Length: 262
Ligand SMILES: Cc1cc2nc3c(=O)[nH]c(=O)nc-3n(C[C@H](O)[C@H](O)[C@H](O)COP(=O)(O)OP(=O)(O)OC[C@H]3O[C@@H](n4cnc5c(N)ncnc54)[C@H](O)[C@@H]3O)c2cc1C
Image (tube, rainbow, N blue to C red; front, side):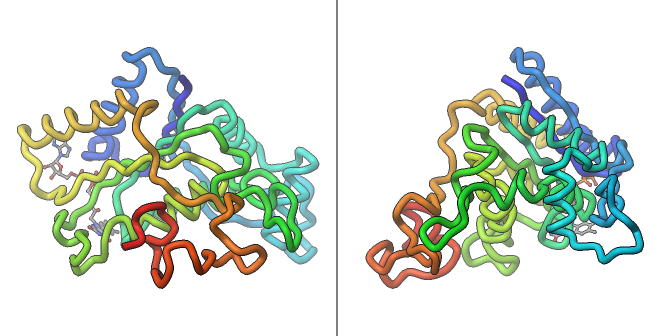
């Protein structure tokens, strides 16, 4: 299988650097082909702007969506964007690895998503009408591919538990797992989260490697998070609200996961 790792940490000698090296080696040893997009090492340009289209006239008004659509459709995207899209097409599985920074991904990785997820590639795909709202949330370009997050946090697991002060980790990762990964069609596996990173000695590091190794070994067997499919019948179209008879009375992010609606 082909695995793309998109990795965002500025320091190779960090915990994230060590876990990234471990991941690459474990997957290759198991016979998988691995490509690594090490965003800091690549000097990845994070801001989306007019230079992302080879044809953009810098004097005219820049429209992030429409310029992206035109550049993608005409094959006139900046080569760094096109190269990452090729890696995504090649991949059977995508791993996004990053430290949790201000409750989300580092800006450089968000900038990878903003630029690589072009209009016509990751969104704006399929029929858009009053009867059908595009191929998204379970359908789209990435259908048949798996995705998983590897995330490290300074906070403790309890801080991210269902009643923890930081908010439940499932909720914090919802915009990434549901909004960025499920949206273009990935099957999203439960995340691998390393909490309380300030307390890692050699013994705990060995445990973490062991657990991560198991997750990598079972990448193709692990049951994805049961996100509902937009066009699977659970949502009213075009309102895109859950039908009243599905999880009646329930609200919040969990209603979009089958069986997690309380
Ligand atoms: C801008 C910013 C925002 C942040 N926001 C949040 C937030 O919103 N929520 C939150 O919970 N945390 C937050 N943090 C903390 C952050 O998530 C952690 O600092 C980060 O996850 C730690 O990962 P690291 O790779 O940088 O670890 P490192 O600092 O490199 O390592 C952490 C520890 O792991 C051990 N270690 C490192 N390398 C190895 C190795 N090779 N072998 C064995 N042990 C090793 C060491 O004990 C080290 O002290 C934030 C930090 C920053 C800088």
